[in-house]
Image 1 (spheres, rainbow, N blue to C red):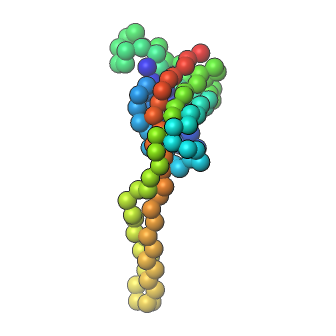
Image 2 (cartoon, rainbow, N blue to C red):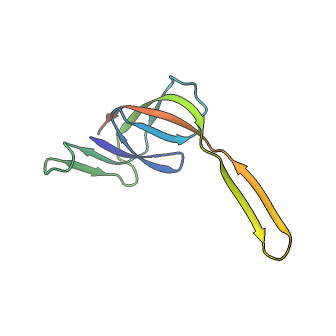
Image 3 (cartoon, one colour):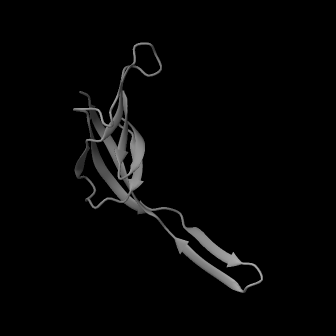
Length: 110
């Protein structure tokens, strides 16, 4: 069983027990959150003929994904370097994106 959810403007595949790396959320580690914006819900054993797929319009009514915030962190540093040739223009800037790790606890279908 899995679900495709929309969370903070991005889409993620959520399976029970999976860890998902999302943009930083303002919540303490260990706190629970519910995601109601489920775009697709699959019930079954995976890629078999017994799989039942429900596609929302735009969301699946009554479907909900429960998750727990595990921890927060920062990604690797990326370097943003801009320059214009022959014009003596150079700008170097670094950036580290903050993220949160959430663990999917349960997927409740309609």
